[in-house]
Image 1 (cartoon, rainbow, N blue to C red):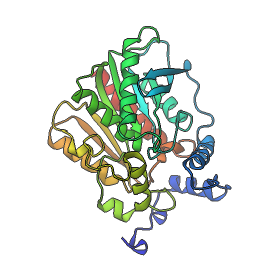
Image 2 (image 1 turned 90 degrees about the vertical axis):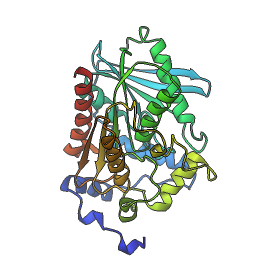
Image 3 (image 1 turned 135 degrees about the horizontal axis):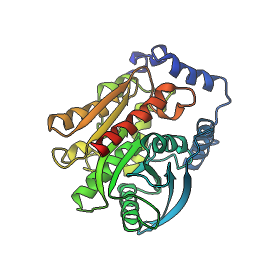
Length: 322
């Protein structure tokens, strides 16, 4: 779509979201020094520092390194209380190329606090250094490790869940499908919490209408993220990338599917919900009005972001306790 035909979402976003835009207008942006992935990561990490400040204190937070066949994977375990009823594995967003446990620290702390469950953040290997499906394999290995060593790390692995935002949402659901299809057991999966993920659509109304310099999700940027993760010759039809090419009719855990109104990936979430619902997979869909992609980061200024995390936590508790 020609740029001038796209919807000017900055005229439509909510007052809360506008405050975030105004914050950025008043700052000297953390711009990459060059186009390299290392430079982009440094700028992204610096930008997220403000949004993670003043996060809630928890009972205990510890870093642990898990050895896998793909190499060492750093994890962070968030204990809101001494003994919790379940464990949630969190995979961060960042287009497969950005992000780490620090950039999503506040989100994971709030999720642990609101759910009352242990949250384990997985610092999976980024692309393009690591290609599909390495991040999924690493998440699987981490889940298996903690299932085998649950007592040592004071974890309840009888009941587990997966959660993630953006690319992390896709990786979370892909990992759940991988565990199912490979017949790998590491606890009963109570629910999957998915905030504004991409699930395999290559074109849609929302991808045409939305996306700009304000969110870094123009069509060419989305293609760049795909190329980094899959390789330029990689197939967009792989069933653990295009999850609509997997079997979504059976043995999919209950899903909380959240979307943002002015997100190019909106239709990915809506299509996933419609697919699961049509096959009677328990799921709940919630679209947060007036917000942009990545709004979950901005809970320091946006009550809606805090509510979205709490909504996912409440959904998980509901599935956990019946």
